[in-house]
Image (cartoon, rainbow, N blue to C red):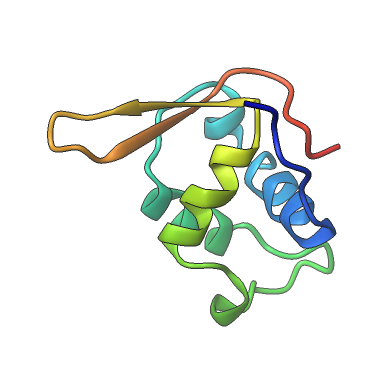
Length: 91
């Protein structure tokens, strides 16, 4: 199945997520943890990120499915666990 194209806003969110060293190192994370990671990364102007501008964990799951640089695994309880495995189509 081909990777769907990302909108400019989705590309921005993935680039913010990839600003985290733990994600780039390949540390596994859930979509809820991705939300926390994005929340904690300041904007380019060094301001706190607005929480209401970050999609919820379900929309983040949908977004990560569209990126070929992220691999999804299922934990024992069925939760999706994501691992950054290389270049994504967010550039």
